[in-house]
Length: 109
Image 1 (tube, one colour):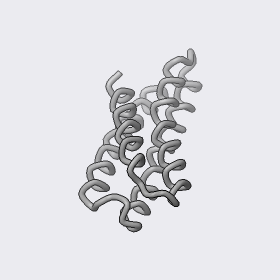
Image 2 (tube, helix red, strand yellow):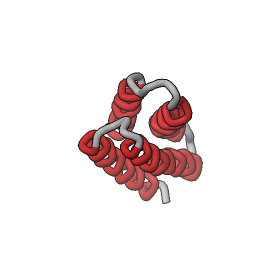
Image 3 (cartoon, rainbow, N blue to C red):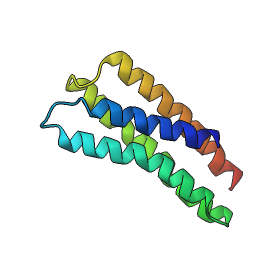
């Protein structure tokens, strides 16, 4: 599943990126990693469900996690933890993943 792999890759990028955040930013590191990881976890869990409604519910949660990452990236940029180009690159990836998840939701609607 292509979107699942993209979500795993995104979570790995976030983990690698936040490993270099200075101490004192634990709340951003923790929340950003949780939100990024939640995307792939909920895609996987949704795919393991049998009914379309069950699948769709997990895909909604996964898509919500993509939206949760957006302000966390913006805050990280404003705090000088990531650069503008880095923020844009990750935001574009999130938008692509979100659109793919929306397609999955539509399929089960």
